[in-house]
Image (cartoon, rainbow, N blue to C red; front, side, top):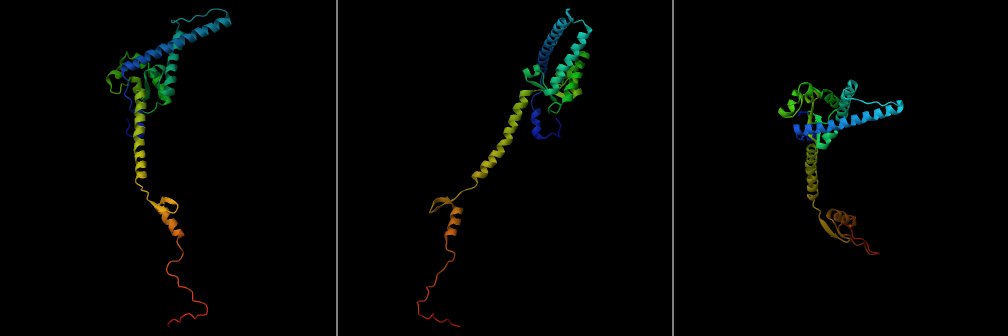
Length: 229
């Protein structure tokens, strides 16, 4: 995993690397699905051509054109799905997903490169798949070329949920501690209980403007006493 990745992005790479059994089973499912779709499409084209021309048309497996189109269809089937979200139908069914070698979301172009280089596993007489068995990251030859890896998708999601939960706990604890750390004193006023600060301000506003003794005014007709000086 790259050292330059932010810790919040590590969780996308925490799913375990998928093993050979899961990947092979997913490939068999995809191979079956793509083959069925292809031959259904051929039958549909044959039916349409027969209606338009009035003569039956059949496609045989030994036809070179049919084989070339089938290989191109396999490239589109895998490449489009890998480029879209990193998983094919078979991989989604078994819970595995293609990601970048650093664990981040797969780039679109990497999905197409992986599909283009996937036949190298067969063209090398199976040696291209050897990395799935012996390498720690279980990366085949086409994974190394495309810079990809295959992980269990549900482990990555669970790891992300755990990470988000751990990040939320300190924030909640700090907010609760701040609230509990502020005591509120109450004082008895004429209106009932009120916080001490408000009671003091209210008492201050009700107090007379001047404090101290007030001399009585002299009676009418009397001369005020003289002062020294």
